[in-house]
Length: 362
Image (cartoon, rainbow, N blue to C red; front, side, top):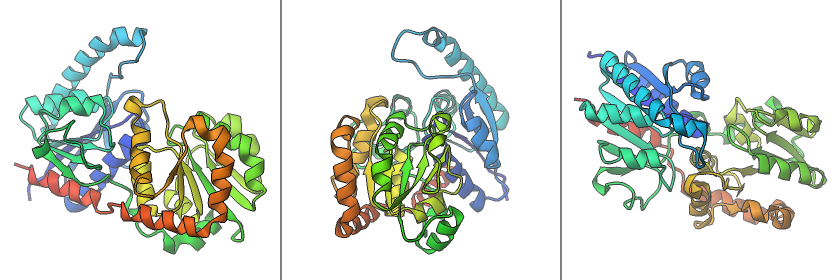
C-alpha cells in the first residue's frame, strides 16, 4: 500500500490548531502508515500543542501585518520571503500528496508554494467571515471546506463544500459523562455550574466581567469553572475557592462541557462549532478585537436561529446581570436554547473534510 504524505498548516490560536489536529487524527485513522507533517509560525502556540498531540512540526519565521506602523511591519517583507523559501524547501524534501491549511499566518506561504508546485491544496475556513490569508489563497486552492453558508462573495462557488468545522470526537456524547465530570472537577451536584471560556489565550474583558459579577453569581447557588487564559492566571487565581475554580487552560474539555449547566463564551469559530455539538445554553460575548469583527458574525448566525444569547462588550455593564439571572431562572428558555443550538451541529465535519482531501490524491 502506497505511503501517503500530508502537510497541515494552521496556527496562532487554538481555533486554527485544533481543527488541523482533528483532521490529522482522522487521516491517521484511515491511513495508519501515512506520514504527516505540520508547519507553523516559529514562536506561536502550535510549536507546543502539535508535538503534544504526537506530530512533527517545522516553524516558519512569519507574523501578520500589524494595523499600525511598527518595526515588525518593516520586517514583514523579509519574513515573507524567508517563509516562502523555507516552504519551498519543506515541500521539495517532503513531497506531500495534499497540503491542507486551516488558517493563520504560516498557512499563507506554505499553500502558496504548494499551489505553484502543482500540489493539490485544501483550505478549511472556520469563520463566517474569512480572513485575508484564506481569501488570497482561495484562487489557487483545489477545494475550500467552509462552516457557514453564503460565502460566495469571498470564494469561488464551484470550489466550496459546506462541511462544518472539525471538532474533537470526544465531545459527541457528553451526556453520559456528567457523573464522571462532577467527580473529576469535585463539584456540588446540587448547584448549577457556570462555565466561563475566554478562548485559548484568555479574554480580558470577560475576566473583568466575571470578577465584577462573581459575588452576585455565587449568591444564586451557582459554582463557577473559570478558564481565564494563561495571560491572566496570576491576576485571577486569588478567587480560587470552594465554589470557584480558576484555571489557565482546561485539559478535559469533554468533561468540563458535561459538567456545565450554562456557558459564557467568546465566539471564535471552533468554540461555536463545539458548543453546537455540546448543546448547552450559551451567552456569547464576542471579541471586538478580531479581523472584520468575525466573532460577532459567528455568534449572530447562532442567535438568528434562536440557539444562543449574545451580549456585546459595550452592553456588559448594563445588561449582563439581568440576562444571566433571567436565563438561570427560566428552565424553558434553557431547554429551547439547547434544542436549537443542537440543530446547527455538524458532527461529521472532520470525516467529510478528509473525504474531500482523499479525492485529491493523485
